[in-house]
Amino acid sequence: MVAMDNLIAKAEVLVESLPYIRQFAGKTFVIKYGGQAMVDETLKEKVMVDVILLKYIGINPVLIHGGGKEISEWSGKLGIEPSFAQGLRVTDAETMEVAEMVLSGKVNREIVSLINYHGGKAIGLNGRDANLLVARRLPPRSVVSEGREETVDLGYVGEVTSVNPEIINSLIHQDYIPVVSSIGIDPDTGKALNINADSVAGDLASALQAEKMILLTDVEGIKADPDSDGGELVSTLDNKTAQDMINDGRISQGMIPKVESCLQALENNVSRTHIIDGRVKHSLLLEIFTNKGIGTMVVQ
Image 1 (cartoon, rainbow, N blue to C red):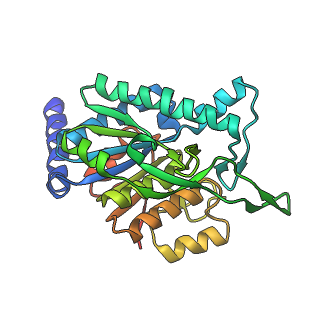
Image 2: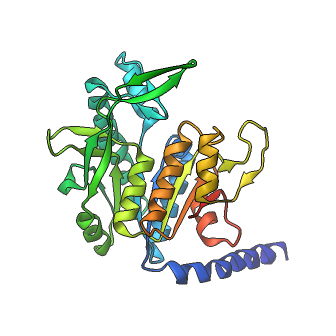
């Protein structure tokens, strides 16, 4: 009887997901893959299997990844001390060389191989390919450090100025899963630029007119009071509240580019944006195919 109850429960889960499968069939989802889900071997496998499942049921996933932990690890091995300003990595020429090697080489190939191993069809790309991500260097910015304001040159850190979605759309139509590393190309110099992967996700989601953009993080979502243990999770965050929380410091550091990416995507007609906990097994499926969902949905 217990076994039958378990089977019925599984059937009910499938029935609950049916309206969402019908609603999202043929739509494009841009998924930013990062954090612990890129480090923990079990979580890696779960995310890749979830992405493949999305493809098999008619959704078009596009995977964007960073690799900050790996860049820091390899920089350390080479004696390069990592430095950050407002959540962005300060990238000198040496660090840029390491970043491109790690992101477009090691990390991208590992993700592609894992998807292919589990029965998907993935192809790896970076912003150099077909001028996918054309970018420019960010200007020096003022930051407050230990109560003092100072100007920081971020080096080879860029922002996307244009996206060429043609290659992504071509791969989608041929039933491939594009996997994109967050490296852009400066057309004036031909140099690679390191771009925040959350920002790239927003730019790509906008260019592809994606139905959803989902950012996998190492937190449950956005908390109303981030300094309080077990603080209340903000399930829906609107533009005004987001700006207020950034201004008063409740949204800070690496969460700022995530929220700004969501707001940018929404301004460019992406239907829904989500910040979810990638440490939870099958978090993508829980967010997409259940009535309750998880994490924080950012809305206009």
